[in-house]
Image 1 (spheres, rainbow, N blue to C red):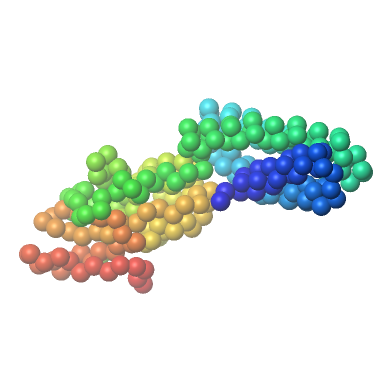
Image 2 (cartoon, rainbow, N blue to C red; image 1 turned 90 degrees about the vertical axis):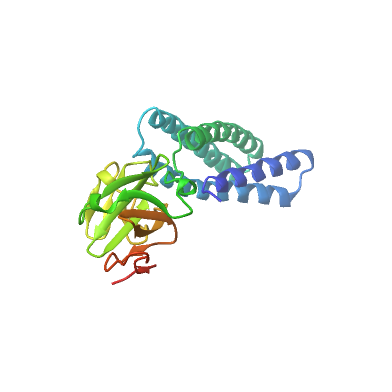
Length: 259
């Protein structure tokens, strides 16, 4: 469930209870409607904080759509807040009217929110783990991977980040999960790679988020060397021991975090 489901769901319940109360006045319906309005307002605060964080990092035209989305949400919160005040003052008819108007505005905001998610891909995982190879696939000659240098490789157009640390090779999805930045162009600081676009930082050992704004980890791949080629496949995390390598034998491979 996403945070926006909380206010939308609560306010839908409030509108339903208001409709039933207008047809068959019952104290339980009024209490339920008021509680649902208040619960939706509380949930809207958390949703607004998350939305503001995402909006600060996006570019036009998504930024303009996000601004309109945010302003509509502010308007709906103001209307539902006013509705709650009217209800507590005993003016239920006005309270129901304000809630209905607020709900209409929130539906319009949700339409723009859907555009941001489904059309502009805001707030979704951009790393596309489903496009990474499920079987070992050669992506780069071993000689092309220098020490401590982020390098971009590809598998069928899907970019893969490779980093050599001494006798270990780390592999992650190269496209930043936040908004699709190229991690191979980012700064490597120890075992952490920083996205050059918005500053999200990920561990190259297992892809976990060290620092936001990203919330999704980078998919991690298992790696090995075969016939002078670095091969990768989807895995929880792969750390490769590159020496010694004997003909016809896979190099020693360890999965997980090592010291």
